[in-house]
Length: 160
Image 1 (tube, rainbow, N blue to C red):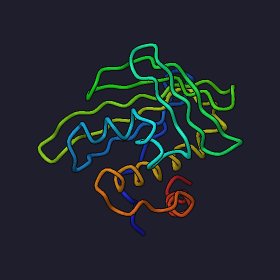
Image 2 (image 1 turned 90 degrees about the horizontal axis):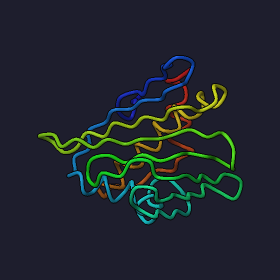
Image 3 (image 1 turned 120 degrees about the vertical axis):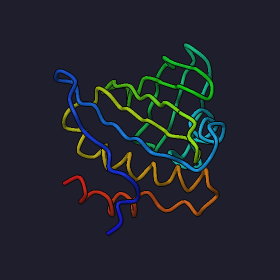
């Protein structure tokens, strides 16, 4: 079975769960920045509906479905380099997600860190982010974007 890219890691900083992924995408930082920081970009690979009010102190709202809505304040906004925001799902379970983009000889390395989820949620989020990053790669390289459920089912056993 293919891993669909490098596995993510689940570690702890003190008692805080930290999910980390490092992936290299064969595109320039601008393509990833657009996919991470605009409503249309997020809707192409992550959520059903999204809005981003960019800039420091701005906001994000992302609807996965009627029962799962993420909101949060933008905490870091450094165009083409770094983006971070609160990740508050359904008005509870506050955590933070950050993205760092680094140009490489072959494209752009994306370093994703999701910090502070409740312990009981990390078992689904780690393979979930893995599946979403496969979708992100397809989106930015103009390949067909696979169904998330299928990808999640394929990668979930890798995190067992």
